[in-house]
Image (tube, rainbow, N blue to C red; front, side):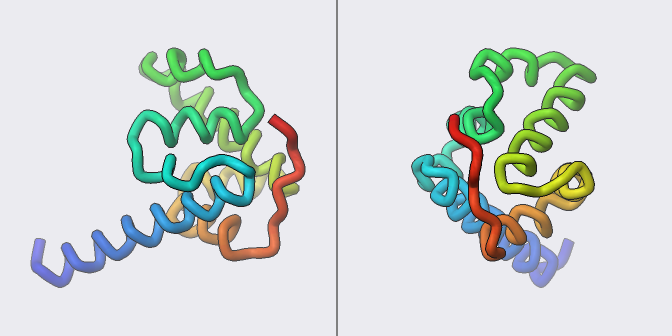
Amino acid sequence: MSTGGYVIYFAIIIFLIISLWIVFTKAGRPGVAAIIPIWNIIELIRISGKPIWWIVLLLIPIVNIIFYIMILNGISKGFGKGEGFTVGLFFLSFIFFPILAFGNAKYTKQY
């Protein structure tokens, strides 16, 4: 990969971290959780309204995909979006998390 490719890759990563930070803040959670590896998954689970012990299910192959989709569905429902947005979060998270962060979506679900 060329230097330009690395620059684009890291720019996308930084943009996604900023977007997650804003999504966490909108949901009333600490934004710094976006940069700490395990904590960000725990906060995503909390924002989705699922029990914290689901983090164990994310360690099981194949099962983790199903439960991650359910977590993303809880997040999209919490922000007033539908199942189509869940599909977008799953396949194109680098586009759909910024839509949640910089759009007018409000977090309505209580954790």
